[in-house]
Image (cartoon, rainbow, N blue to C red):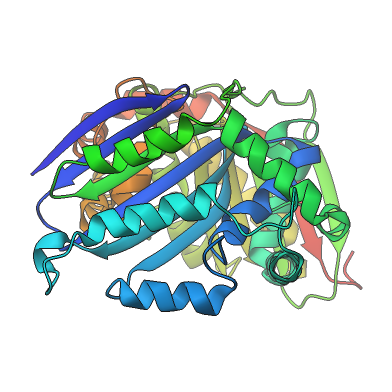
Length: 425
C-alpha cells in the first residue's frame, strides 16, 4: 500500500512523500535538475561527490563516516546523470525508521538535519571550497571519466550519442570532460554550488511509512535564505539529419562495438510513450526479443545485441559487441529485424512475453526505496500528475499490435558508430 503526496516548499522546489509500510528504512533524496550546458557540466558533475565527502562540521570523509556510524549506520549516496536535456544531481541518505531505533531517538530528524547541512553548509575557505578535499574529488572525477573510457561498451554508446546529438545538450557527457575538470578551481566550484541552489529545479523525495512534514519544513527554512531564480528546463525532441551519419573510431580493442542510433517522433510522459516502450523491448529487450533471438542466437553474429529506448529524448540505441569481420553483417541483420517489426511480423507470444517482462520490471520498483524515490522524482519534469509503476503497467498491458507497429514506423536510422581495432578496416 502506498500513498503519494506532494507539497511546494519554495520557488521551483517541492517535496514528494511516498508513504509505504513495507520498508524498515527511510530514504531521503534531494534531486537537482539543471540545464545540461557545456560550460557548466563539469563543475556540476563534481558537486554531489564534493558535498557528500565532507562538510562544515566534518573536515574529511573519515569524520563524516564516524557521524554516519553514530546514526546507526546511515548511508549517503550521490550520483550525476542526464535526463533529456537536463543534468541531474542526486544526494540522498538512508537510515532505519524511528520505530526500530533502540534508544527511541528521532533518528530520521537527525539524518535529515545532516543531509540538509551537507547541502547548505559545505566545507569552504572564504568563497571557495576547501582545497585538500577539492583536489581529492577532482582526482576521483578524472578517474570516473577514465573508467567510462575503459568500459568500451559504455564508451561506444556515449560516443554514438555525441555524434547523433552533436550541437544538442543531450550530446554532452553528464560527468563532464577531462580538460574542464583539470582546469576547475575551488572558487569556480563554489560558484557552481551557489548557482545550483539558486537556479535548479529541486525535488525532495522521502520514502517512509510516516508523514514527512518535519523534513520538508527543515528544507523550507534553508531555501528561504536562498535567492531563488529557477531555470527553465529544456526537453527538445531530437531532430534527425537528412542522411544517416556514420563515424568510425580506432582503438586498441580486441572486440568491435557497433552502435546504431535511431530517432523517433514519439516523446513525452508515461501516458504518451508506452507503445514505444513495448516496441523497444520487443525489438531488443530480453531473450524473447527479435535482436537477441535472431541476430545473436540464430545467426551468431555478435556477443550481445540489445536496444534501449530513451523516450524522453526521442532516440533509441542498438548496441552490439562484434568481431570486426562481422560488422556489416550485424548492421544489415539489425535493419532486417527492424523491417520485420515495422511490418508487424512478430508473434503474439513474443508480444505477450515483452509485456510480461516490462510489467515485472515495473513491479520490482516497489521492492526498493531508492527506485521508488527516483521514479517519482524524475517525473517532476515531464508529468504534472505522475503515473505510478502500477498504472504504467496497466497501460502497457493494453498496448495492441497495431500500436507497436505504428511506433515502429515512426522510427528511422539516424547514426551509425563503429569502434574498431587499430588494424581493422
